[in-house]
Image (cartoon, one colour):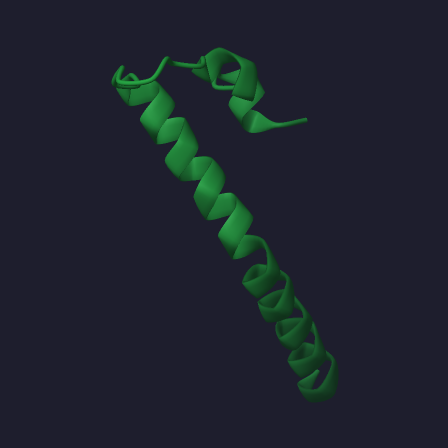
Length: 59
C-alpha cells in the first residue's frame, strides 16, 4: 500500500489547477516527492543489486 495515500497525499488529493493559478504547497510538495521517486527508482535498484552481490561475495 502506498504511504502517500494513507496520509491523504494520494495523486487524486493533489488537485488540478487552472492555467495561471498557483498550486498549493501541498500539491507542490506532492509533485516534488513524486518526481524524486520517479527519478531515483533505477539508481536505487542498481545500488541494491550491487549491495547484494557484494554481500554474497564477501559473506
